Length: 99
Image (cartoon, rainbow, N blue to C red):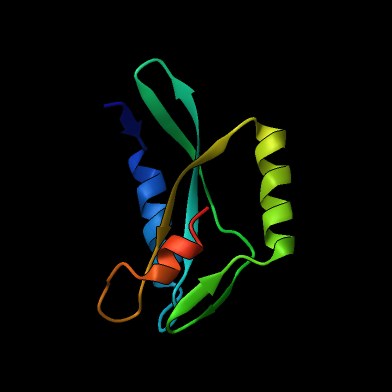
């Protein structure tokens, strides 16, 4: 099993982005690089997204911006993190919209 390293400041940034959604879902992406033994998260990325109380979607323009950002920084999506405004659960939409 490989390690996932993330600085505390990036965890705090993630939480702040997620809390700002209030009564909507929101997704943030942890972007990183591989190293011997695992993955190091380098950046929290808030993509262009459409959200509501029970879903989020990254539209085509958001995906294009993400891919351009990844190429420019030579990173990849290490993790996708999202919230539910009420009780959290893993839905079929979570699987369908996973990057």
